[in-house]
Image 1 (tube, rainbow, N blue to C red):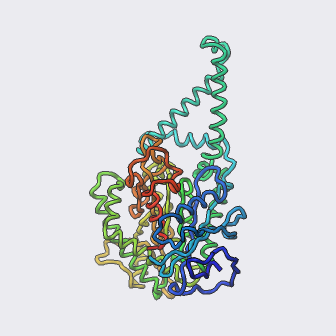
Image 2: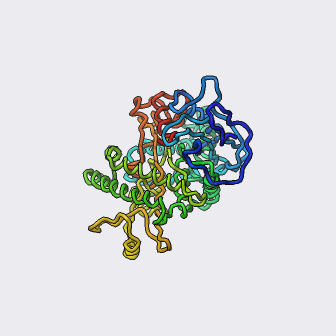
Image 3: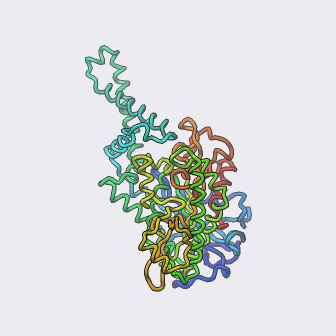
Length: 513
């Protein structure tokens, strides 16, 4: 019943019977339906705790889309097989007011991608290996924003080694240092610290090790986590009631969610392939023109800089351009055309990727050896960027493109770089390359600029300089000043400052405006 209810006051918690798949009604004939998938971060997460807090924050308060009376319930919890776990449930909401891309309002379902159970069991040896991997690199290969934390890690490691050395000194040496109670105190401190550090390392940071490092003993866990996420995305795309999927991730979960977008895009080859006689091909052409124009702006701004990468200020300049606005609009138009294909096997529903407190800002430190290595992986389309890498067409491919015709290759042909490539089939087809998910997915990143390591969120930072200036970076410190406490776990806290909650809700873009 909740999928078909048409008034804001109806209760979406009524029993519903599954109907056989049918072709979706035209969007103008029904209220919209969208799914929000939340990917949690590291730690001993409890199923449903994270998603319940997030949904409450997003859906309650002074909201422009709300139709809820002060005394009315607005979120319900229902069983749903898509999550693949009986520990998880779907949270569903009332229909919103009309607006944006939903002329009859939209209902929203919240899903949690829970993966903490698949990364448990990290060993102390794995943690020590990971710390050694982070420590033993030259200072020049440590990004500036993370150097204070890197130096602190060195200090703590030296302190731990010193205490361990003291604990094994022979009794004869201790007798020259002081009385026996001094040795007993040192041994007690070492034992307590060892226990605390061991628990933190294996339970919390161990999940970082298990997922971020492709070591032989981590491969199975990484594969299981990704497959669970991919299966949830597949299930949402098979369900013809959804118009759109928003993927939200926090902390370490942003690395997982980034991988899921990349892998899911690569496997949906039919969805990113367009016949030249189809209506969606015109949207692809518009996107190519917008991407070329945005690329020209990026090149112009980069040439005015003195660094080998874009600065945050340069990214902000690019995002203020008309070319960026046109690219964003072209992204949305093409994604909606892909959604309306009418075939579940060839639709694409992920519209927005929202990262909160993302360690991807330190990608050259965590995912690569250094900045050149990160750049190389991006050019090879191993790590997708926004905007995506535009590829130079090979001579044979260019000949096919000329024969097919109707594509924006300008004269003189000094730039034949495109996001898509032609395939010699009948009727002719063009496909977006496998590293271009952000040709249609809008990426927004929210972070809290840190000070003195423990103020703000050192784990987070801007992503535009590392993953492309089409990422909309939002620094919460610019809204109400720098934080005076550690804020990594406070992005959707109900008691957070109003300006920060408003920024989060606006970034969700509930009405797909």
